[in-house]
Length: 328
Image 1 (cartoon, helix red, strand yellow):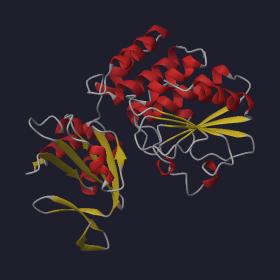
Image 2 (cartoon, helix red, strand yellow):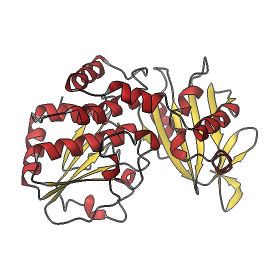
Image 3 (cartoon, rainbow, N blue to C red):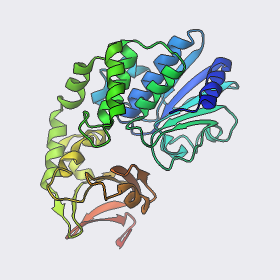
């Protein structure tokens, strides 16, 4: 449920804005791309005389290139007086990777709306729609659009349904609530192209992706703590010709090992090691686990990043790239 006062304030921000800029997190996934496109197109339809732009520091994954207007997403914006900012699927300012280069995005100079579903979001917008119980940010965008009586069409619905589908694993994850099904039904009624989403997101994979996933599965190790862990190095990316975005979805197969409490996938990204955590159990909170490494997320899906590189021993460990003998 969105607060009526916040919805009213957001509406006033939109109406008074000279320009409206939509921004999502770096290394965007389906929910980030779906929500930024869905919100951008909704705003264009609601305010046809205003300039609406969409921004992300990284390009959309190849699997998202079927979405309408995906190639209109720009990199970092150049701010002007009177701009209103909409942050989508960003758990914190740093998730945009714009906080250092464009600090005025976050210092209160511009009115902003933050729409997100990650627990621990610090409410960094002027107005915040943070619903940790929502399965996706796209789900919240649908609710806001309905509360504002905005018109929705097939293209918008397809973008938003993509985010719902990717963050629920095609409606298979445990975060698929009755509200998610109502949101899906709402979007299908408007004309969301469900089969197009299924084909491009779940039934299409490049050869490089399959080769990379093969390495992930080959390296799975089980721990005494009840975890299933795998890792991919820069060498694996080079050998398979895969981009790091092609790892999306691989951890779900690690998480499928019977009897496991949690799964962890480590991957080298330049001088950074990214960790993705998943669990199917109600008594495990992987967000707390990620928090030990300054990460975060949800109870059953979370992540973190650490400076360093991967070094195989009996188990994988993250080490300082400049001093490999010193573990993190």
